[in-house]
Length: 138
Image (tube, rainbow, N blue to C red; front, side):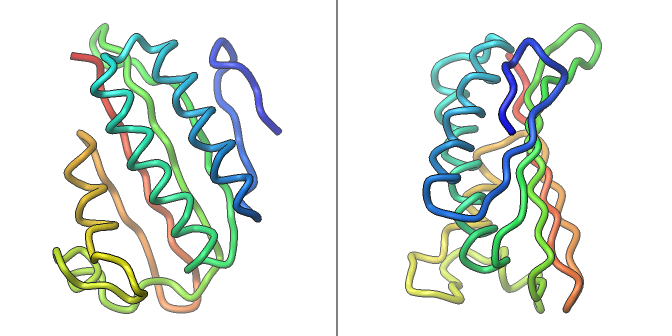
């Protein structure tokens, strides 16, 4: 289900490639509503797109929850990705530039972490992965 940025949050099921597109669109809408700069909108949408793709490809599907936050009068957008996939066996390795478990460039998680202001990763083998990212308005 998708809601508008004027509502508290939205949850998007990530089960197909088209859902990755829906995540990007929703994150862009929330980033605009939070009045993030165009550069920060692009960074957040790029990070969310990569994590949505990871949720689908490596996690076997899951969900993305998008919401606007406020901290000491400053707005931000949080996106939380959760799946019940195999988890990430070696987080340090997965966050290393150049390492890839697939055929990519190895900049997915490490690059995503650099694009956002806050990045939290919680994973356990056989229990899935939860990644939270936040971009704050400057």
